[in-house]
Length: 199
Image (cartoon, rainbow, N blue to C red; front, top):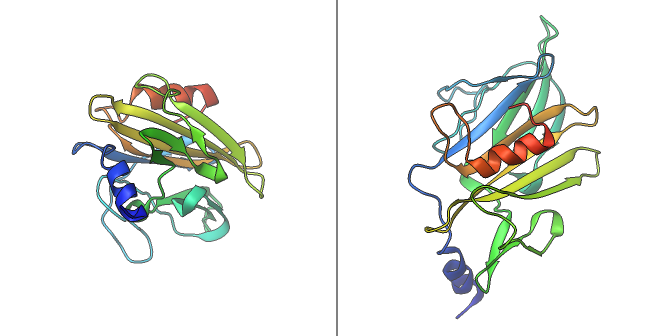
């Protein structure tokens, strides 16, 4: 069996359910309010790369860009030239997400930021595996991985980024089942509460 076949076999035990949705949060920096808008693709304004994802895009002058791990997410900070309003645009590459875990010998291994940590017994449906690191530009990345359905081997993950001023820049969660209020699974909500994430 070659490596490709081994990876295919290893990942076959983990999958997202058919009802899984992706959540993307966008922050208005001046008020820390979370804005959600469902939009259709519009050239130059909106980038939607897959199903089950919501992105609010905002035109203006680009001030800075923050990149999530594995190029899964790009946060673009813009300023409206007319109002001076400061907003963040979050884009998630749903068609090519780099997974934060691999499976080796039926064990779940966390691989973000060059790590190789066995987290199989460190996460559940009610408690996430939590990890944080600071990148070379001083942005703090907070990661959570949790079990959505233990019987089916379904998991989800999320990454949330704090900028160098201690303000939340943006984040996303993938393969997490959202309820009618837009809340994620218990493990994700507990993780976000622990770091004080406002959305």
